[in-house]
Length: 303
Image (cartoon, rainbow, N blue to C red; front, top):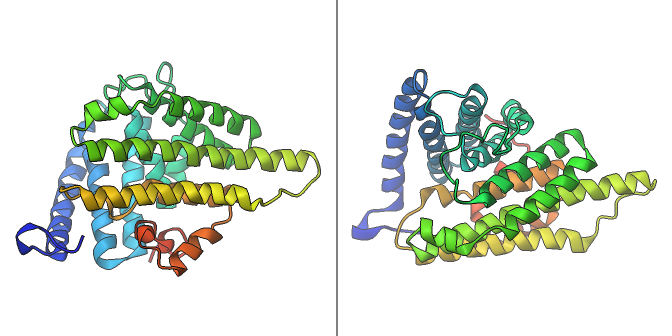
């Protein structure tokens, strides 16, 4: 990803694109005060701007602040039911990802507490993704994992595992191929969905194991095999992401950072999963891990 067609450098593109996103954010902020339809574009513009900011300046504080605005914006859309806002599962999942990556605790708790059930909860009026139950299953599973992490509740973690397994079973490669004509993008989106389901289930499984060990009066066994399993899923996802980026002719600036990976590694850490393996990957200069920077996972302050 060192250059673009016609000799245009990445830095030129990134600077111009960041300037554009800042302008769009200002426009959407103003519009969102009266129009709920501007909330999703504002959140997505914040997400893109965060990726450009990180690529250009590697500022933890600025990157987190932009992702934090995305999280708060989406939480506002879901919780206030603004006219024009489409409360769909993809945006709900993005809100949780962004809130974790940004350390935006209030937005995370608010989204986790909301009921994403498509029949009775905040997603019941969704207009997008109605032909794909797997997205709704993933949203429900994610909410359960988030609540289980907050409350350290084994029952919610078990329920989350069941919901996430259903999201995996109901995931259909053909659906992605219908939505994304580019077969490379369809393959990546499909594999990313699978990885997110597996990683969330691993976090839920950790909470269950911790509770079972406590009930038995034992210390949780930090199985190297368990940690390897979590790490191997991240490895495969990042390798597939690298292959997609290298082979696809289009540019995907939101993939400068793999936001789901940052969020789910952060969530796993909150659940007590050690991230030593991640540090080792960076120490070994594994190139596929450039999109999962340690700085955004650490306790570095938002300067």
